[in-house]
Length: 213
Image 1 (spheres, rainbow, N blue to C red):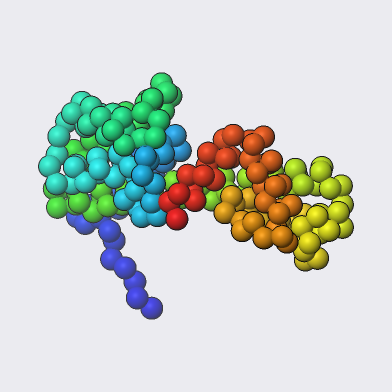
Image 2: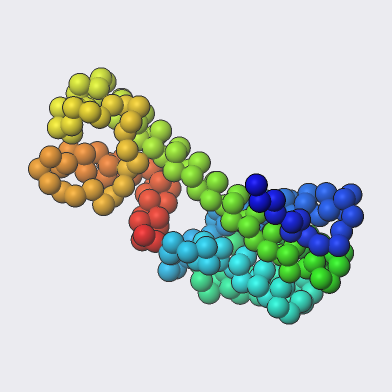
């Protein structure tokens, strides 16, 4: 079995553990910020998902600057690229705290370990961000199922409306807006749209996700 070498070089075990704790904390802070960030031009790439965070990590990796400069750059990038340029106080605090901790971490690791530490932060942010997205996908699907249960009362009513004998409340699909408007799916399409009309946050999330496909 292939065993990977430690991603961070020249650090003692205790130091390595502390670095990993810091990486996790920074990753969560940046991922929390990204839950409020939607790009004007969403895509399916890691680059588009990471938004300002990805650019800040690349900047630290190629040319290190102080925390104030990075915060100003992050805010500028957010305002230029976000669908909603407004930054709520709590969201801004998470972004700034993440940058503070990143600067502190980079300043306290060996020079030859910095790039790998920054890469590790990037992977951690991406993992937590996508985990949050998948959890939100699951929540929307669960809420859609609950909506259909209240509307049709039983699965037979749902199957007749959707003209699908295999559908059930437990296997209801994610409420995508791109369902084809064939005769067999008209009721299904109407149910999706009605559900999203009642849940604007879900509608925004679904629309943004489908724009990125």
